[in-house]
Length: 79
Image (cartoon, rainbow, N blue to C red; front, top):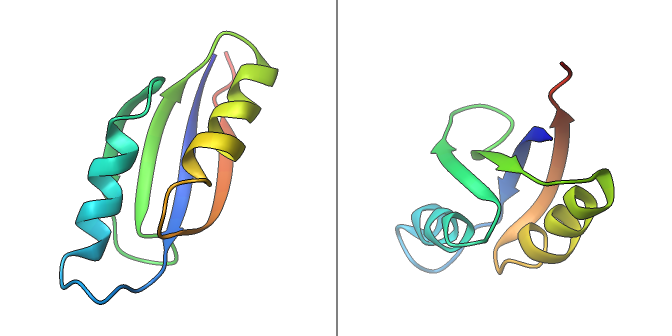
């Protein structure tokens, strides 16, 4: 199962705070790609998980648990 996770990042004291968060998220198992974007969200991650429960754990525990992440919105890719 694949999904896109839209991520809003808080502001940090570092100039490249969003880049640091992007690097942290890219190291999470199950995260395939992370892109910086403009607009309502700051990052988009393409993720893979075996089950919906695994996807939920990946997003809530790992991605939302990353320092600097404010909110996420998950878009599951239908087949």
